Length: 119
Image 1: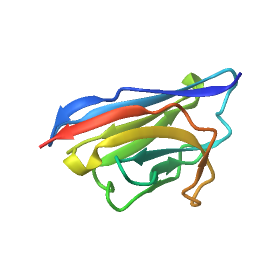
Image 2: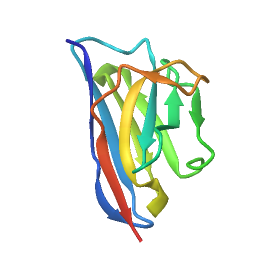
Image 3: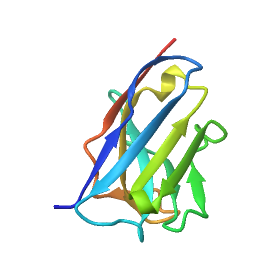
């Protein structure tokens, strides 16, 4: 069964960096746009970033623009989210998903990885 599996979350201090990975198994998703989303405690899940299947187009939420970078390695069937200059408000469960560029919506969700940023 095809699935997306996130990893790389953890507890860090404000200003630190983390790199999340989203590995696909069971089938290749190289032809699909992919996205990262997050959900903070007590809040709805929100869009973070997306990347076109070809890797040549990206989209970011204003709150992370300039600090986060989404990338992909289609040969490895993996999408990454490099997060720099982390802030306490970046705390939440981060999910990867299939997406369609510019819709800022996801489908076929992974199980999520927790990111906690302390002040």
